[in-house]
Amino acid sequence: MNSALVDEAVELARSLPKAELHMHLEGALQPELVFKFSERNDKTPPFATIAELRAEYEFTDLADFISLFLKCFNSLETAQDYEDLTNDYSEHALADNVVHAEIFVEAQASNDADQLMAGCLKAAARWQEKGLDLLFIPTFLRHMPLAEALKSFDELEPYHDIIGGIGLASVEVGFPPENFRLLFDRARELGIKGVAHAGEEGPPEYVWGAIDDLGVERVDHGNRSIEDPVLMARLARDQIPLTMCPLSNLRLCVIDELGNHPLKRFLDAGVNVTVNSDDPAYFGGYLNENFEQTIRALNLHPTDVREIVQNAHDAKFPSPSRNG
Ligand code: ADE
Ligand code: ZN
Image (tube, rainbow, N blue to C red; front, side):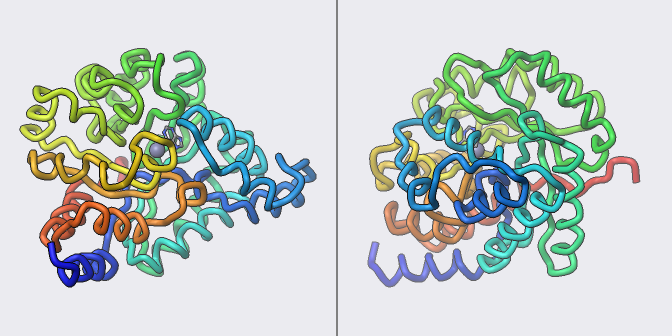
């Protein structure tokens, strides 16, 4: 494709109002904030200096990343920390023309889920006035036992009516979605929607497990569905959205180069794919950077961009509350 069309596609991606559906709040924790929160909470930061922490940002795989991610977010403690962190992400999001963001929060792994929710909700009220809707989706840790996830879900009971849904994340291989069927059934009975990371490193069977056993409304990543033509046909037929994260895939070695990202092949197969930043502080870019690098690497056309952006709007969850 000629380079003027690619530039046009990049400009279009920048200027369109967008929805971001796959972003982990703790993945927006820039190194400066790790040190700020550690100091404020009288905690020892995970590394002696910001430069030393940044030097750790070379990941070999998902497990390698999760280990650093967990160390860093241990600096978060109070509602003020979560409010500041939500504000920091939201400034970037609004600058990128994001008008709706669904944000994963690590309720189960957090030190205090009430502090987490209080800070996030306070920030959300402020950003709504500025034209950015924020929804929060607590995620559960698939490498931990189901009982721990159920306990965390029950502890979130005061927020069941105001969360956007629930999610399943963390190290994938060896922890198939069906282990968490009871959790997703329980949420569905309460009218709470579900999403799950699947097919990031795990095989296509995990994507089948997410859609058939957990009944999720969207699949986070889903890359390895490309290996299973029957699954691809199912995703296309039922218009099950995939929240893809190209820069994350590159930095976690899910792909060897951006030009080999499968996103365009999903689009061509009629699958409802979206572009997202996943953990922007760690993977080198917020939403517009993900769009720009992906458009250039895959030679996406402006019509592809319109479709991807519209897909995300179509796949948004409604704002709570279910009670009112
Ligand atoms: N938690 C934060 N980022 C994640 C990712 N890319 N995959 C699984 N769990 C995560
Ligand atoms: Zn993710």
